[in-house]
Image (cartoon, rainbow, N blue to C red; front, side):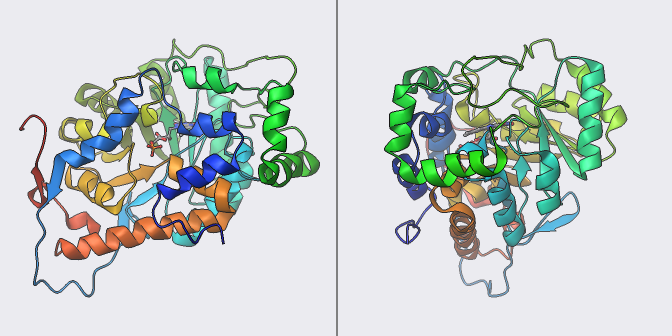
Length: 387
Ligand code: FNR
C-alpha cells in the first residue's frame, strides 16, 4: 500500500522522510558544506539532450547488460551504503535479496552492521566494498576474510582520505555511535514503525548493532554511551596499499571514487580491473567534480578497465546519458536505501522495476536494441560550456 503512490525513485525520499527519525533520514539525504557536488550530480544531466531515432524495429530489445563478462538484468546496480541495517531491518540483506531477484549487482558497504559472510551467502553475486585499516597485517586479514566469504569483486573506496564535513549530521544529532538522549528517544517514539520494525526487532534478535566489517575485527557499536571510534585516520593510505591488495586478492578489484584521468591511469597500472567514477554522492569534498562530468577524461585514460559511475542517477534518462558518455554501468545510492526503509525488500524491488522500465522505454525511443548500444552520437549538449 505504501508503494502505490511511488511512481519514480524520487518519491521514495519524501516517504522515507516521514518514516525515519530525523538524524537517520538526514544521514542518508545529507551531503557536505554547500551541497555543491550533490546538487551538480543531478543538474548536470540537464545539460544534455537526446536525439531520438524512429521507425526502427525495437520490439526485441533487451535490458540485459554484461559487466566483467557476467550478465545482469539491467545496466545499473546498488551502490554501497553504510549502516543500512539502521534504516531497514537487516538492511543489507534486504538490498541483497532485491538485487538478486532482479539480477543486478549490489555492493555491500564496509561500514555495514551485518556480517559480510551473511550477505555473500544470501547473494553470492554481491560485491564487497572495503574501508582499509592502516596496518598491512590488518589489510591482509580483511582481504583474506572477504576472499573466504566468497565475494568475487572487491572495491576499495579511495575518496575517504578524511571525514567529510557533514554539518548536517551535527544539526540533526546524527553520530556513530548514536548518543542516546531525550531527543533521540522522542524521535524514536514519533516514528513507531521504524522503532518497532527496525530498532527493537534488531535489538531483540541480533543485539546491539556493531560495525561488523570495517576491519578484520568487529568495530564500535552503533549506539553507545561513550563515543569510542575505531576508524582511525585514513589519511596515510597510498597507492602501495592498493598494490598490496592486488598481490593478495584473486578476484576482480575495483577502485571507487576516482575522478581524474591521472588516477584512473594509476589504478590501471596497479592492476585494478575497473573504477567507479564517483564523488561519493557529494558527501566528501564539496565542489568535487561530478562523476558525469569526469567520465570522458576517465574513460580516455582507463585503457582496458571497466568504467562505472554513480551520483545523482534517478531516472532511466540519467542512466542512458551516463552510458552515452562512456560508462559501462551505473550505480544508484540513496533512492534504494530510502526504498528499503519505506517498503523493505518489496520497496527496493519496486524501485528497481521503476528504473528498469524507464530505461526500457527510453531505449525504444532512441531506436536501440539494448542500453549498451548508446553512444555520444545520441546526445547533444544544450547548456553550459560547449565541448
Ligand atoms: C554512501 N556512500 C558510500 N560509499 C562507499 O564507498 N562506502 C560507504 O560505506 C558509503 N556509505 C554511504 C552511505 C549513505 C547513506 C550514502 C547516501 C552514500 C556513497 C555511495 O556509495 C554512492 O557513491 C553515492 O550514494 C551515489 O550517489 P547517489 O546515487 O546517492 O546520488
